[in-house]
Length: 114
Image 1 (tube, one colour):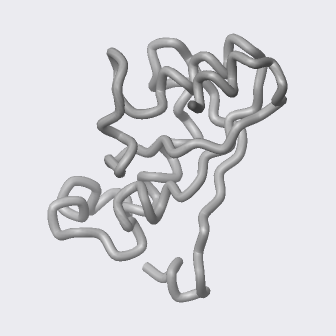
Image 2 (cartoon, rainbow, N blue to C red; image 1 turned 180 degrees about the horizontal axis):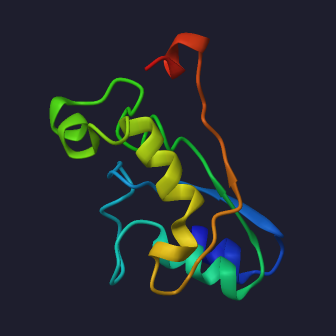
């Protein structure tokens, strides 16, 4: 459905899930899984890529598992890693797909406490 909406040329941007750590959409179809193919198509169409829930659906980075913490510490907190992954996605992705807007979705200030 997302791909059909992008291909319709009716939109200038789309809100999608795309995260450093998996989510319910990260195992999606296609050769790369998840929404990366949709993000790349949006780049081809010169659309804005609006990333939703990178800290919640992207692995509950405000309350990470011990495994996730062990992968990012001591250099970065998981939420910092997730942010940097989004901010530098164009440098990390083989198709150099930029992500334009990121929504943190914090419900309360304490969600951002380290």
